[in-house]
Image 1 (cartoon, one colour):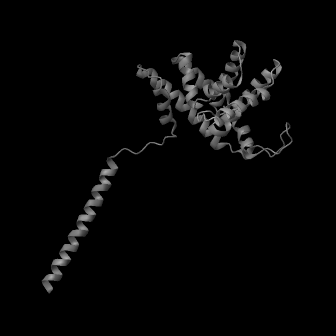
Image 2 (tube, rainbow, N blue to C red):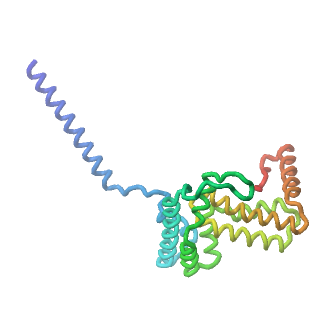
Image 3 (tube, helix red, strand yellow):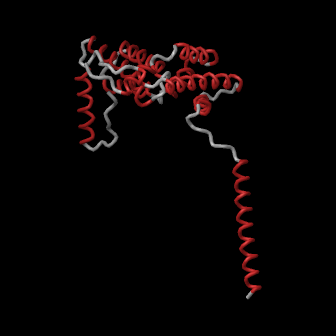
Length: 237
């Protein structure tokens, strides 16, 4: 019986020892693996943005990445260090409503120094063509320029070249202004909304009723869906 206890004790000790060894070995293996990069880190996002350009000049690609990462970090830091509470609670002079928390954050974020934007655009244009610059701005704004333009093409019948020129000019301006805001869903959408309002005013000014055009388009899409066209979907207003 005594021998049996000794054997069991030895076996238990061996199990603990093996388990400890395995844990130590696993920790050592884990420590040798590179840490996962944060997908929201400016350097990681800059790499993703520049990759779409397929630049063969690695030195040039490195400069572009550095410019984008520095800009993203500046926008993030400004946003994080300037809460919306810095803007006093007040009333919107357009509609008389009290500013929301999102509006107050938008206002304070809009005060970011202009040099932040200027450094980005100058840095991009130093090494890239205008088409490549636009490709980077599209990455910043998740393709809102083309998506919105396609919506206008669907909504406005017989769009003229003058119409197209005005729309693309406003949307290009919206895209460039949007990159200085951290919140894609709310703040960038607000910038595009400002320019979309100008576009709709342009149609009113040229004798076309925007609301009527949009309603006609939506009615057409809904009729198509009712007829069985599952791909029909209204464009963004």
